[in-house]
Length: 292
Image (tube, rainbow, N blue to C red; front, side, top):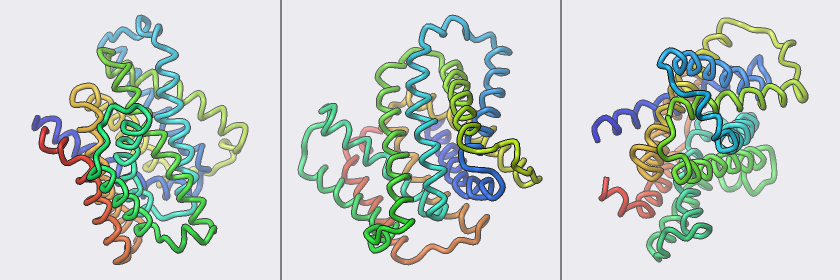
């Protein structure tokens, strides 16, 4: 249990700071090119690890269509919407909105899969959490129909895709080697992202600075290779609900990262909104917390 908790904190910190690093990387690179680079770096590292540890890469090729689904939902769609959404919002707001993933997880299990029981208190917590997100981003900005509205919509789509992927993975990927799964997912995603980047952007025309290299190293090695491996490991070992608790901690590290790396300031309304989100999420998952 302690090991899982420590891993949860580690990946939360890594992914929280990543929002600020993504903003830095996008100063010179286009959004999809940044994602393609980080994905490729993560894939190369995990491929080397898989070969060195003599993992059954060829034998797991039979799960290709499963890996393709995880790639599309958990990375390609999620990352593109995330990168584009951060163009219109701050890193702090993006990381705080990351807390919508447990909200979407609960909503999918309750309304679509119907594996969660309908409870008034649970619905109340869901509504409270959603209200908190509106306060965090700024409901006036969302309703104004400006660029912040677009950023909010893109980030919402990104985190919904991520939540859906986690639920599907927990149900159909049990027993499959975590390292091999992560390697395949990052490999397939790399190909898809580079194809999209080549068609929509000009990746070879981008200038590369030392900051860009450091940013891509962080995003590729720590966030993509290390982060996704730990994330998939926790889903298989501890379940999607336990793993979703990381999204309570990511906003905290995201705000810290935005303040330290980008000199972003967070308003009192955003702080209040974040607290409201956490209260709502606790109400939704109160029974799950007791069982951990």
